[in-house]
Length: 393
Ligand SMILES: Cc1cc2nc3c(=O)[nH]c(=O)nc-3n(C[C@H](O)[C@H](O)[C@H](O)COP(=O)(O)O)c2cc1C
Image (cartoon, rainbow, N blue to C red):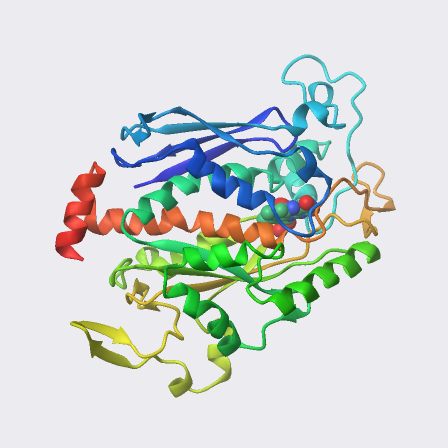
C-alpha cells in the first residue's frame, strides 16, 4: 500500500515528503513530478507569492536510473520564498535558542486553523499553527501524489479536473457540464485537464472563464475572496475496485476522505450528488447494458460507483472549496491576549485558489485509487502487477 508523509512549514526553508510502498520498476523522474507542480502554481486570482515560488521536488532516495527501487522515496523542496521573504523566519521560528523579543501573533483569522490550533496545542503565539495549516503544504502533497498518478498511468488510468463553478458563475446543471467534459474524457481524463489548463481559471468553457475572471477582479477590489466547485474525472478504470463488504473498504468513501482532508474543502459529491436527492429514481440510476463483451451503464449519473466499487465507467467526483479565509477587508476577531475585539490582520494571500486547488485534488485522489489497484492486483514490482492486471481485470 502506498502511504505518504509531508513535513515543513509555509515560510520555512523547505518541504519534505516520503512516499512509501511504491512498487519497484515504476518509471519516475523529477520532470514528471514538476509538470504537476507547475500546474499547481498557475491560476488567476493568485497573490504575491507566485512571483518567487518556483517549485521543484528533488528526488533524494528510492529511484535509480529513473525507476523506483521499491524503497521509500524521499522528496525535498526548497521554499524559494524563504530568503526573499519578510517573515524573518530565522528569528521568529528559530529552531533553538531563546525566544527573546519575538512578538506573538495574537489575532486569529476566522475560517483558518488559527484559534483552534492554538487552543489545542496550548500555544500563546499563532505562528506555528499558521505555518503548518497553510496550503503551502499542498505543494509537497502534489509532488508525493504525482508518483501514484504515474503508477496509475501505467494501467491506462487517467485523472483530470476542471472548475465548474466559481462564486456565482458556473455551468447550468449536470447536462451542460457533461457536454463540456465527456467528449474530452473519451480520449482519457488527462484531455480534460489539458484543455482546462488552457484557461487560467481552469474552466473548459471560454465564456464562463471570462466571467469567472471578472468575478475575481470584482471580489479582489471589494477585498473579499472566492471559492467554488470543481469536478474530477478518472478514466480507464476496471470494474470492482473497492468493496461493498465493509465501510472502510468503500472506494467512494475513501476518495471523499482524501478530498475533504485538503485545505478548504467542505464537501464532496459523487455523480449527480446532491441533485440525486431532488428528483426520482428513473432520473438517477444508470441502466445496465451488455456491449462489446462487457457490461456497461447507459448513463453515468452515479459517477462510476455502485456499492462503493468502481463500475468501470469513469469516476465523476466533485468537491466544493470555501472562499479563502485571509481577506484584505477585515473581519472581526478577538485578540487572544487582551480578549478585545479587533480587525483581522492581512498577510499576502490568494483571492481565489480554486483553479490551483483542482490540481491538488486531482493529486490527492491518486494514491487512494492506486491502493485499490494494489489491493486487487498487488505485487512488489510493476511487471508483476501489470501481468496480474492484464490476466485478471
Ligand atoms: C491551493 C490552496 C491555496 C490556498 N491559499 C490560501 C491563501 O492564500 N490564504 C488563505 O488564507 N487560505 C488559503 N487556503 C485555504 C486554507 O489553507 C484553509 O482554509 C485553512 O488551512 C483552514 O483549513 P479548512 O479550510 O480546511 O478548515 C488555500 C487552500 C488551497 C487548497
